[in-house]
Each structure stands twice: as C-alpha cells, then as structure tokens.
Image 1 (tube, one colour):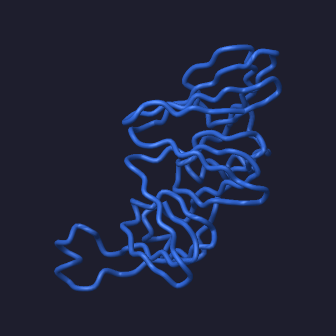
Image 2: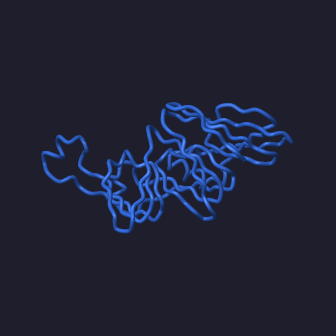
Image 3: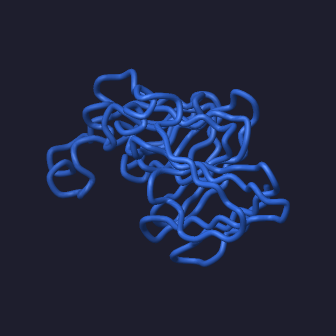
Length: 206
C-alpha cells in the first residue's frame, strides 16, 4: 500500500492498493476509485463494536475496499471539512487517542474503538464529551482534522493548557484533565469559557 495526499485547504487522499490489499472507512467516506475494487459493508467486529464506533462519532457500518485484480487499484478519500489529512503509522499494539469523528480510513490491520475518559470533569467539560476514538496498530491510519495542525512533545510533568476544541489527537501516555479558568472577568469576557484542558506529559500531542 502506498498513498499520496493532494491539495492544501481541501485535501484528498489517494490510496494505491496492490492485489489483496484493503482499506476501510466509515459509510460514505470514499470519494472515487479505479480498478478491480470490491466493496464490503458490515459492522466490522460485530454489532457492539459498531455501536461503540457510533458513540465515538463514526458510522455503525464500515466499508472495506479490497483490490481483487492483478493491477494496482486506486481508492480516494475526501474529508468532510477543510483541514489536514494526517497519516499515522502505528506499530503492533501502538495506539493514539483522537477527537470524535477524526478517523478517516485505515488499513484492515488497524483497530478503531471508542475510548472513555476516566475523569468525570474531563468528560463533562472537556469539549468532546466522555467518548473519544482509539486507533491501534499495526498499520497506517489517516485522520481528518479541521484547520491546521501543530505537534508538540511534552516531557514528563510538562503541562499545556488548551482550549478543548483545539485538541486533535495525542499519545496514550498523555494525562488529560480540565482546569477551571481563574477570575470572574476572565470567565465572562476572555472568550475561553469556564474550563481549559490540561495536558501533562510525557508524550506527543497534535
């Protein structure tokens, strides 16, 4: 499998599949395709797995695209909103925690599940609710993130405070919590609301 990302503001992803290779995406995620591509739509993992993905912002059914021909096939995917397509290469059992609806597509070896926030405050006030997405390797996964994306690496104990709507995805070693904005005037007039997300290393965050 090889891929190309095209465009700037409204990017598209071209995935080139060799014979027998496959990619899966949520229902309606494919933009166009070329070659001897077989489509298979199911709940991928069973009904409970499908319901979990639904809670995490994806569709109940997933569609898998497999190249059944000897020649290379093309499957293209397009995001729902302007932003960036981020490729994530995962090793065996390596995971990333993503915002709801971030998943775009992945190799069939990658598992997509829901992820619960353990802290009650983070779930209520963290901007995305209790449920996020977890992708686990091995293989490539592609995320669609609205807007531009920047990456930071935090050492152990290092902290950032972030508007929760600006968290795209992060490594599981990151500790996620929420902090109340101090000062009555700040709460009312800063435009940042009552709570900020508190991210503590070690780990990377996008």
